[in-house]
Image 1 (cartoon, rainbow, N blue to C red):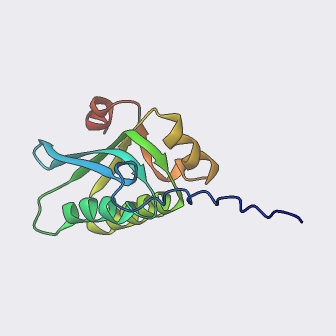
Image 2: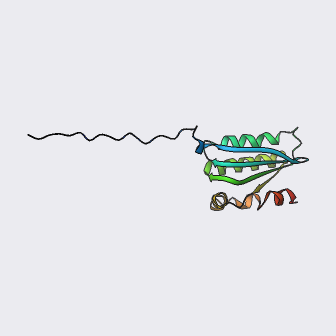
Image 3: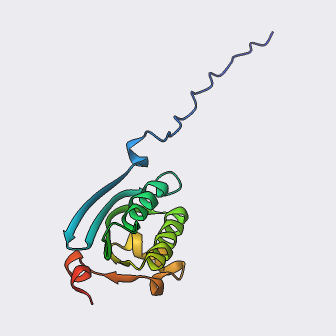
Length: 137
């Protein structure tokens, strides 16, 4: 007579949800001078978070905002996915249409590499520091 043993099935791995702290983006918006706005971006810029980035930047392009320059500080970004790249392209086009100058401040490889691979670096005015981005003419 043979004995049959059931091997217990392990519980499935936990599923990541939109509420995970890893899936969040931080956006700090502040004025930097007359007509200048700085947006410091941190965390992951992906399919779940790129709409927040897009909205935060596009809000600055309102005709009555008086904004002439927006600088995105991206050194705090931990991941830049294709949705994030698409959001950057969209805000660049919207800035151009609104007559607002858009500059990026970033030295992080995790941001510059996806921009480079996608061939997008020539589309953006990229500076090493926030001060350099604000001072550029």
